[in-house]
Image 1 (tube, helix red, strand yellow):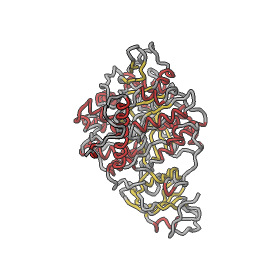
Image 2 (cartoon, rainbow, N blue to C red):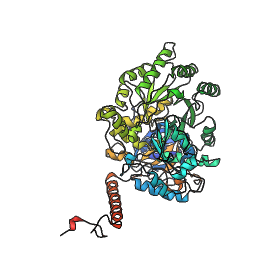
Image 3 (cartoon, rainbow, N blue to C red):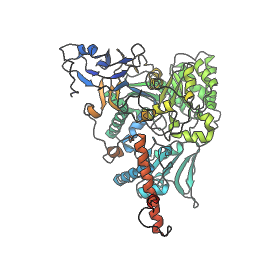
Image 4 (tube, rainbow, N blue to C red):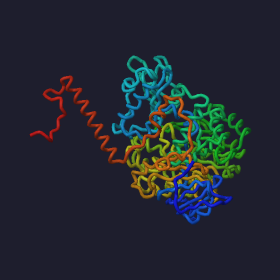
Length: 625
């Protein structure tokens, strides 16, 4: 595989030649000792030289791949500190992605086309990565629209943690009928005749949404590996080289982890994964944690695939729900079992992460930790953190710091921000989550997306949210006082994530001795206008010295992947994230689509005689004499 020819660097016959050299770049190293550079060299997956052309020239041998960055910005590979990458990979090629789609009209057109190619027995599923706020129409699809787009093929459309819309065929396939009882914490919306309408509501638990999705067919055998490899390539497309898998519901250990284990053994991972273990069955959590402690230890594995601890749930009763369209849930008396779980982990050297949306939950959890701290179990060298924490208080952050904890925040309010604003008001929304307050206390604050079932996996949407405080619907929630600058946001997506896995000495920074994980960007993150941050992609992504993604001038330098299977996969036809155009072009397109819909509505009224005296041609008052 050849790289771009570069003049001025003459290969030399040397024993320790670099395998890869990238030069002529604007390198943000993340290293305070040398923050900027122009070139670097890689050998055996590790950075050996960071400097300029004269520094890397002696390391260029006959077999060295030399890539000219053409003056583009290079940064350390991104690390999503909270991504459901294992579950996402097992389902990726089955899902129609509305990530980045700017109009419902376009989304429905994609759905209609996909339904036509989906074979009998399979579902069309739109699962996360979008919000009604991102559409020009600013609304969900209706059941009637889904029925019209797919009369016979089951269609399941998940919207945040709030609801799902099913067409008639999906209601039948899911087995919902007049006599189907509402599950605990969920609602099957019914019509006047008592039959399900196709709307499912989280009230407030999203279990009804996920358990319904679990009824759809899944991939088997080699297709799971192919799907996962294509998902990892899609993440590499945005410069991701690492992720911390937060586990989650319907992700059983060890069976659902076997695909990434097999890929790691074959050297076919293109993304480093640190994973967590999440008890799946209420009432069985202590038994599961005990069994896992006997099977493995945190940091088992290598730099490509490693166990990082337990969570993001330890006991189901302690989990609050993040459906901001509903009131905060009132949790029962969960502390006794929760304390058993935390004690078991800390006594056996296991770290953990905890899903906690509301300060009310965080305060109760901290009281348990402080009780155990009196016995010397906190802080005890085990890494632990709270995830999400949209409404965490200053007092709670002080307590987290005292107990040696960390924080991981996600851009869930990019997608759920307006629901949060309507329920809690602008004051609470301005501080959700209080990122600056976390940083001011010296806490490690890592950033992620919580993809794929709510937020998109595109990390640049999250970076834009961190910097701008804006939702995907362009509503400003967080004022400047609770935003961070671009360098801090990038650190939250690189070094801070490495700190959560204990790898900060070898990952997240471009310096000699560190893992060769880097990305060359399509635009300069540090200088592009703020709205354009969300539109950045990678042109070249390198993980462990391997070129795992290449586009533009570098197309063809990356590793070949197997053909997507099944061949009717939505990803095979539409790809993943739908890259949108700059704001001005997008606004013009949306205006054109709105005009088209207006004209369709006018024609409909004219055909029914509801607009007497109007000609069939469009009416423009500007041309009336």
